[in-house]
Image (cartoon, rainbow over all chains, first blue to last red; front, side, top):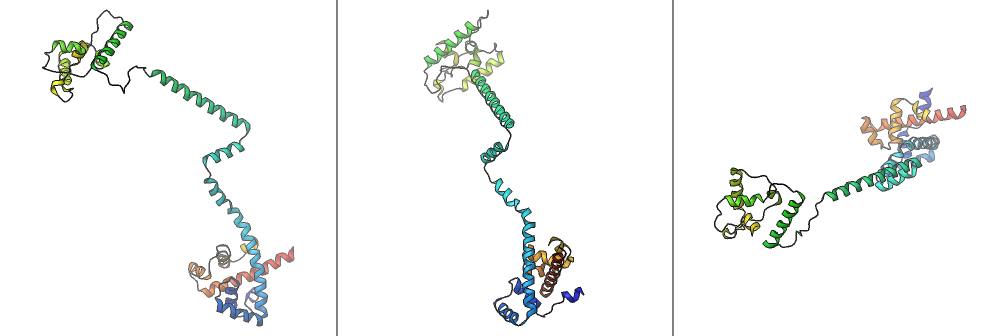
Length: 223
Length: 62
């Protein structure tokens, strides 16, 4: 019975389907419209299939409505971080806002403490790195530093600059001149013979490019 | 309509889904299912006919 009901009453069902779904070309569509004027069963089927298709479309829209959230989610992802944060705070309860503010303030205080502590570790110096110092200036600064050190660390042993001792024990090379000593060099323990020789060799390398202008550390300090 | 579509035989339902939901052309459906174009159209005709009958049944029950 079903087969008889489903069997096409007209032989032009393929044209009917193509016409119904708009896939018939211009000539086929015109031809089928002429056929519709003569075939009542095709007219009825076109009308009834149109109703069925409307129901299918409504059902399809209902089903696809569940997937509409996909582009919305994609759009949300493109929001800026600030907008997302604002939305988060809008939706969050009051206690969460307070907790977040407390955490932020604590974080700022900690960062400030760390920065303040690091600032204390910086050794203040009155030496301007951009200024050009003459030999006399350097000697004066070194002497002041030594005097301060001796005042702050009163030790029974005199602590002259080690580099000076090195210069006194080694034969001074002719016209040798060396750059000023560093503070660390002055604070070292008495050097052994091998260390002295090595240091002296290194100091001889500290030239200004001209052998005649080499200045030993001890020379400048003792000036 | 959901019940009516789900009650269709698989070979008819897949044609309906590909045409109405995925909006493929008859040629594309024929290529995907490896069927002649006329078979695709006749299957869709049969599917529409069965859906029409089932909808009428549901309406008469309600």
